[in-house]
Length: 167
Image (cartoon, rainbow, N blue to C red):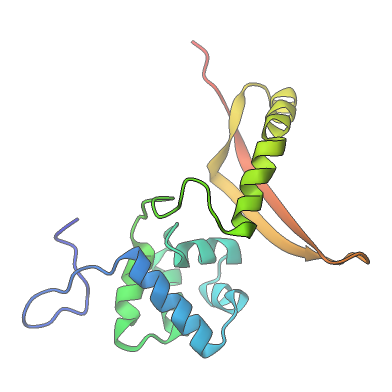
C-alpha cells in the first residue's frame, strides 16, 4: 500500500495518503460549514444514507463515482481528490472504537445486546437454525416514527442468514 499516493502530488514527490480520521474530520467540517444534511450528501452519491455516513466516518468504502460525488458536494477545494481517494480505500473496521463506547447513544446498543442478545439469538436459531446474521450482506435503516408519547427511533437491521457448516 505504500506505493499508493495522493493525486495532489508536488514536484517534491507524491503526497502521502490521507488517513480515514483526517478524511472524516474534513467531511464533518465541510458538512457543518455548508449546512448539508446526510440525506443531501447521500442523495448526491445516489446511495443509502446509512452506507454513505458509515463511509464518511471511515468504516466503509464508496465506489469511485459515489466517492467523487460526495467529495464534490462537500466542496473541499484542493483536498477534494484526497477525500475522494480516502473514501475508496478499504478501512480497518472498528479499529478506532473503544471496546465499550462511553457515548450514551452508542452505549444503548451495547445495553440492548446485553439485555436482549441471548433472546435475539434464540429466536433467530429457532426460525433459521444454527448460524449467524451477516454483517457483510447487510442493510440498516434508521427512521423516525411519530408517537403521541414522543417520537420513537426505529432501527431496522436486515442481514443474510449464514448457516454454520456441518462436516
